[in-house]
Every structure is written in C-alpha cells, then in structure tokens.
Length: 265
Image (cartoon, rainbow, N blue to C red; front, side, top):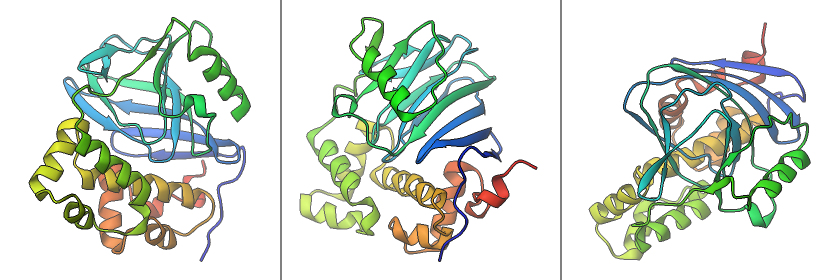
C-alpha cells in the first residue's frame, strides 16, 4: 500500500507541543527545514537521527546552549553550524528557558567517506544558502580541517561492550530482531547490557533502537509508503507500540505526518 509522496519544493508544516517545523524537499531525499523549539533551564536532550545526517545553525542563538564534547561541554554560538553524522548520538544541555529557531538540512543520502562518523561545530561568519547536496558537501569538506572547526568527541569512557551493542543495533534495527538475542550472544546480564550502554550514550539500547526505527519510518513515509507498511518495514510488529514511541519522540500521531496533513493551508 502506498500514499502520496512528499513533493519537491512544497512547504510542509508540523506543530507539536514543544516545537514547530516547516520543511521543504530541495532535492531527492534532501530536506531543508526551519524549526522553532521551546527549551527549559537545565534541560538535557539526546539527539540521534538514524541513517540521516544533519547540518543546522541558529543565527539568533542566545548564550547558554552546550553540546557534550568528550567529558566536558562546549558552548554553541550563533555563528556556529552543527554537523551531526548518521548514527551519531549527541547530548545537548540548555541553561535557558526560551524559544530558539533553527535552520538546516537533513538527509539519508550518503556523504563522502571523509565526512562519515564526524560530528563538528563549524564556526563561520557566512550564512550560505544551500541549493543542493553538492553545495552542502562542498561546505563541509572545505571546513572540516579548518582551525575554526571543532571535532566533537564521543565520551572517552565508552566501553567496548557499548560500542559492540551500538554497531549491532545500527546494522539490525529494521530486522525485527529482539535485543534479547544479542544479550544471549554476548553472554552478559540484561542489567549489564542496558546500564553500560546508557552510561556511555545517555539512553538505553531499546530507546536507541526505537529512535532509529522511528526516523527510518519517516524516511519511508516521505517517499509515499503508508504508515502501516513503514512501521512493519522498520522492525515494529505492533502498531500500537509504534504509535506510542512515535508520540513520545515527536509529540504527534504518525497519521498527522502525511503530505495532506502537513501542507500549509
């Protein structure tokens, strides 16, 4: 079963409790977006975007937004762009309560190998208007080795076990395989399995798996796959469970995430 796919250069709008997003497909599988987000003091947030990478900046960003960099936090400034590669997990820390605006691009299209696995803060005075994936790649490749670009590190105390779990989930999240199978293969207790991953990445293995599945389902829905077919394709076996996790992550029902419902009136 299929539904109408998202169309090129049409604006789509989604409003939820703590954010609103306006997006447009500028090239096949490349989405530009503007997002307004409500924050709160001492709020910590974990982001990961499955097989998608993200490039974004907030031109009027107030002081007090930090991203975890190894075992410390680095402040993001208004002239900075943040690049988050696919399967990267980042932790944000907000010290203010305010609505902030983001502009950026998100896509599952593979980037050059030199950019894979990187999360970067790119400091630049320019605010380029990217019209294509090629423009974005040129920008990233030009800045990746500049002294004004900061490479964000994973936490230095990530265990070997946590890395093995993460890699396995990256490779199998859409297969429907239970994580209990991996627990048995690794011959560890469920408590050790979950706690070592959360200590390293800030969320549990099952939370990470669900996030990957939800974002992959969005990619499928963008191409015209129905919500029902998308949820089964990414590894969910229970529509009710999918809806609950979708609402928990995106604050809206997946039925609202369709070209017809997202088009501006």
